[in-house]
Length: 174
Image (cartoon, rainbow, N blue to C red; front, side, top):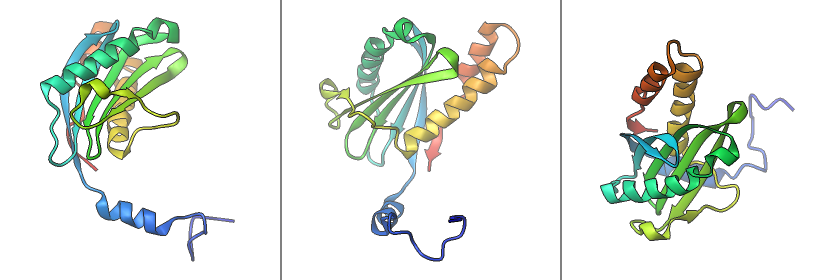
């Protein structure tokens, strides 16, 4: 069956759910927070904020502590030493994503979740939990920045890493 043109919805499609998601979809703000060292990695840090929520300095520090603990296992996972940290003040709670580049062009992703504003309650997300649409936008940019600036870049590695650190996404994410 060619699914490039639909005359009717397949029974597997939850039309009500998809339309409700479309109705509630909105922009969220992304802000780069700089590059830090954590767990033996260079870590590019981002804030993603739902309407009415802000990532505070305390949120950032708590997320960096989570990243420090997770990234400390980097050598065991074959880490290349570069990571991205997303601190997401979501509409339904807080999320921390730690994404790092590991051997063979692969990446490692850990998602931590907790109630809004309760940094001590951040815990690993359930098995299979993946980035939301806004977090995925940041990670898509970061995949492209890694390829563009580090893998396909030219010059000494220090210049490539400087270019990678400066290549950020910011503003409204859709």
